[in-house]
Image (tube, rainbow, N blue to C red; front, side, top):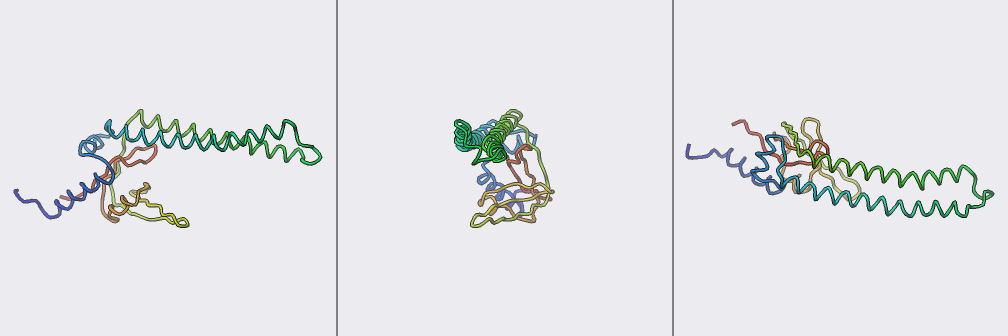
Length: 188
């Protein structure tokens, strides 16, 4: 068969575009089909994860340090009990200590998720018809796709490339639903 069908050529061109936009290679796709990430994909995820973790810890510290400082400033020296009742002290204590602890807990959870995902390097797959949608919050747009009930976040370029109503196979990291690679499914 020296000549390739028009449908097959379109599928190959669409896959090449997906490789560019989703940033994966033919070797990545082969490894993902076997249920694993390549070293290249693991390194890319690790860089993205470290950036997120640094941002989360930065926010936790940026909010937590001033709040804890304000808390200790309230207690030493204490405000006059005539002006501020016990309930107000308790409420302020809960907010000023509880909020930083909650942020630190979230940062710890994100750190744990990052390192357990990187450690295992496993991908799952889903196959089915994709439905794309846009959510708007004020002036921001958020792009998503759903396949067999699972939702994945997309960039604007990814959203533009995906054909809603077409069948795809998605290879993704189960813990954070990061798309490792994706390919159109054909009936040929």
